[in-house]
Length: 69
Image 1 (cartoon, rainbow, N blue to C red):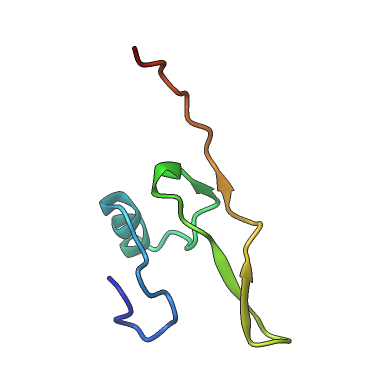
Image 2 (tube, one colour; image 1 turned 120 degrees about the horizontal axis):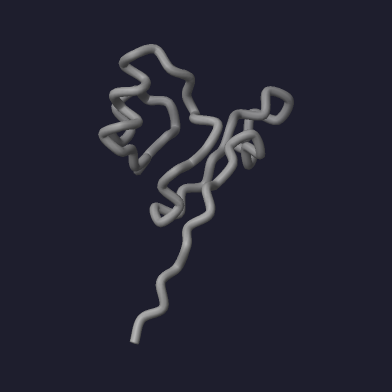
């Protein structure tokens, strides 16, 4: 994916399911980030400043941690 569209999303990591969802016409970004271990920082363009700002509309799913040992 990378920066192919020239849209400032350099280094964007997508899952296969996310790509397929967008190809089906589903909304992007998703309302819920189901892959929190990717540690993505969701941002959007602030039209007033022209800068990228954190997008609070995307919620991050909680992951149950399994104790190792």
